[in-house]
Amino acid sequence: MQNDLIVALGLASLEKGWVWLVGAGPGDPGLITALGLQALNQADVILYDALVDERLLTLSTAEKIYAGKRAGVRSCKQDEISQTLVALAKDGRRVLRLKGGDPFVFGRGGEEAQALARAGVPFRIVPGVTAGIGGLAYAGIPVTHRDTNHAVTFITGHGADGKLTQMDWAAVSRGAPTLVLYMARKFAGEIAQALLAAGRSPDQPAAIVANAARADQQVIVTTLGGLEGAAQNAPSLAIIVIGENVKLAEELNWLAKTAP
Ligand code: SAH
Image (cartoon, rainbow, N blue to C red):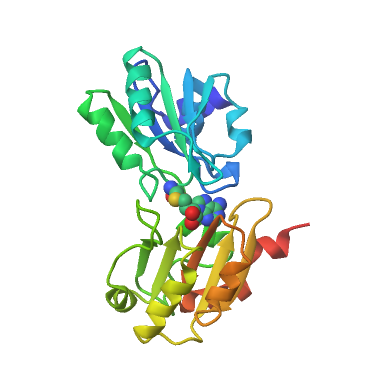
């Protein structure tokens, strides 16, 4: 079946000495791409992150190396991960770097790709479903909707130093009607205050989509004014979305409607 699929689609092959940087999607293992499956099938060694669903790993007989964070502590430094990828490829292995969501969306995939490029290691980027789009879809929230928003801004709530991202929040507020925030639960209160100060209404709809596309997904619909309180009680793996498109969840929350 897998071989039929590969032949029918004419998929690229993970060759010796190559690294594939693959997005596993936000949770539901069914959201991995056909190229991602191909890589699981062909890899000799897999470096995977904490956010990757275990069931995907069981599909592969490759050596598995954990390269994620545990309890918020980096158990593996970014440089070490990049160096490991380079060394494994130079050893002639078929290397799969499997990351949650999309590797190029707040996932440090760019840094790993730079390290590979600089070391002369050939690589392929396999995009994935990012939490800020696919995770919202699993909550019945279209990231854009003609009646509510023609644009969207993706933001990370905290920077490399672990503090609130330094930016012109008033400009961010004016920039697009809908804001999608990654890694923002901890600073939800500060961000909400900044947006209110910039003139957004406290009644504007907002949602926290926690553990999106996972069995324990939780959708907390609130308002900009209620965001801080709602975030305090939310699970830590969460996407925050602020904008009128959140209202669609009431009608389109398909997962809640079809779940047994
Ligand atoms: N590359 C990933 C993002 C990594 S940054 C992607 O494209 O999705 C980690 C942040 O992503 C988390 O703090 C959270 O804000 C978000 N995230 C990732 N998976 C999630 C999920 N299943 N549910 C909710 N948020 C998620």
